[in-house]
Length: 114
Length: 114
Image (cartoon, rainbow over all chains, first blue to last red):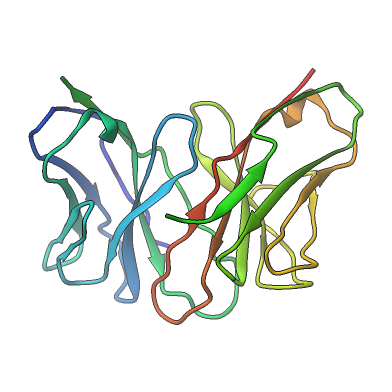
């Protein structure tokens, strides 16, 4: 699986858009970009994933550059409850075999300021 | 909202005791996982299962064992707990399907061995 690089921490004002970057310059053509977050001491929560196109759901938007070497997770109107560690994970599609657990790095600690 | 449950949420136990951490999911997912996370550190996959009667070791070596006798149930057992087993244990499940997939995590069990 491709390695990802994220800033260790970021601040964002409440009500503003939080933009979390992720570099994955060695990503392969069949690897998806996933985002999860972990609020203090809880189990990680799936946010969104994408392959090539930008994606949006009720939680966030995912912008993937045309060369797929980086992506940005956007929380459009951050609230205090969005304070968490955000993980960018690159993973091949499920192939029917092999260990397919997720490899979590250190992530970005996003702190939403009131 | 994902239906995956872990009990107990917190456990403090003495060295040498046998413990079983319970994990169950009501989504009918084939695949289940156990991750271990020390405070402030990354999650690591320790066990996974493709389905009933299938169990495999994950990326991080663990003295724990798992079983999968029923689809919905994936307990983790430590035969003789030691202080080095103190950690948070997170259970997850995912649907076996082609292409991308997401994992749903339980709330975790925080284990302290004294």
